[in-house]
Amino acid sequence: MKNTKLLLMLFLASSMLFACSSNKVSDTSYSSENDPKLEKQSTPETEDVAEEENSGNEESSSKEKSIVDIMNSAASNSVSTEEIYVTGNVVVGEKGSVQPGIYDLEITGGMGNITGTRSLVKSLFLNYIGAAPGSGLDYPSKIRLILFRGDVLKFSNISKIKFTAVPAKVQMSNELGVGEYVVGRDIKPGIYKLSTNANMNPNLTSSGWSVRIIDTSTGQNIEQNLNPGNMDVAVKLEEGQFVSIKFDNTDRNISSDEARLIFTELNQ
Image 1 (cartoon, rainbow, N blue to C red):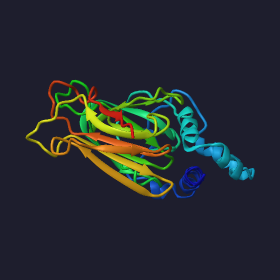
Image 2 (cartoon, rainbow, N blue to C red; image 1 turned 135 degrees about the vertical axis):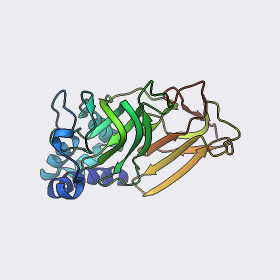
Image 3 (cartoon, one colour; image 1 turned 90 degrees about the horizontal axis):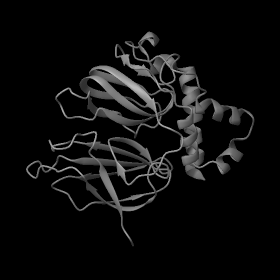
Image 4 (cartoon, helix red, strand yellow; image 1 turned 120 degrees about the vertical axis):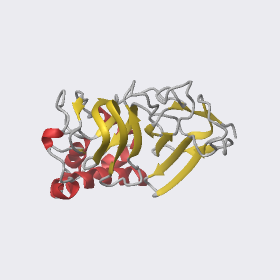
């Protein structure tokens, strides 16, 4: 299982890279006192995988675990945070910081950009715009994020945030919002026609949904856009792929948090 072994290696390498070169990953403006206060303690998935490697069981583990299994385990180690003021960057896995896992990032104060750098899975770009509810600007206040050890989150003009852990087991859906998802965990594999519950301004032909499908087993990325200038769009999703979704909302009758990209399965 080539893709599973690669993702296991990503977790292992991420753990070792962060331990050996935290100065390289950290931004000069970062301080652990700026990070979220954790509600409880939990052991990161990377440490579990590292223990398997040290015991010589990596090959056995790679045969037994799929990428979806690994991401479910990572989600089980996610740790929710309290609401915090943003006074610096957040380095995932740093002591006192948000732990690796799967989260709903909630913007509770301000409006601005969420950017950053990935430690290894660089194709999973960190580049979103978010706004707190009631800010008067219609950007999503909640964004699904998959976070690996050593990732750095940077916030511009966002004053308060909160990380809410996503459970290890979730109900699959054919309607996804803004953020990052795993095929086989959040949505079933298949070939889908894209549509949306949000109206898109026909005069803004390039404004709408953008989808990036990331396959870590092949290193290939596929991008598709659903907008008024391109409404006939289909995508093929295979188990273990990551799907990154963004939305430029021009519909004032529905909020960005309520907007969904709808995947309707095609019978072929």
